[in-house]
Length: 210
Ligand code: 3PG
Image (tube, rainbow, N blue to C red; front, side, top):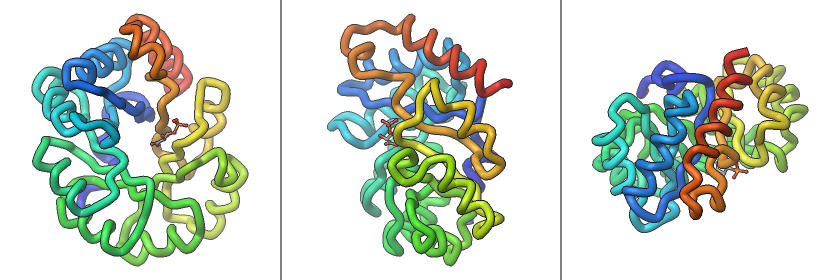
């Protein structure tokens, strides 16, 4: 099995999402996040140039850990690895997807929202999964309920997380990193408000370090 994502994550236990239209924009977002103390980022495969964005961040900001998110197929997984992604995140878990992601050798966090999906990941020997969409799937109370049953599994909750509930998610023993888009709001990106992204990141970093 590939290494655990938790063993390679850099910086605070935060995994902000980068959704960028161009590699240049992705690098600007990543730089702003890094200035706020972020060490690891997830570039989501939801734009045409997402793979090029991953490569650009690898080249221009080598101190950051960069992964691919929204990995939905074997093709996505392989293309992400070829582009230089250092880990893979998926919103879903199917046998085919899990096999393809494991085959890349990269740390992975497949998405789960139910006990059966967690059990599927466990059947493949995986111990770290993404809990998505975290807020709509029961949030903190659900993670507490799951902790009793899946005692060795640790989660990366994403979806509906922000400054208001970050500390509560991070306080859970079965949470190893928290993801989301709240540090990179589309309006700030559109208006190139990099300083604000750095400030949001610094605020989140401060919470994560507590
Ligand atoms: C994801 O891809 O993990 C989600 O888009 C994150 O959800 P959020 O936008 O509510 O943070």
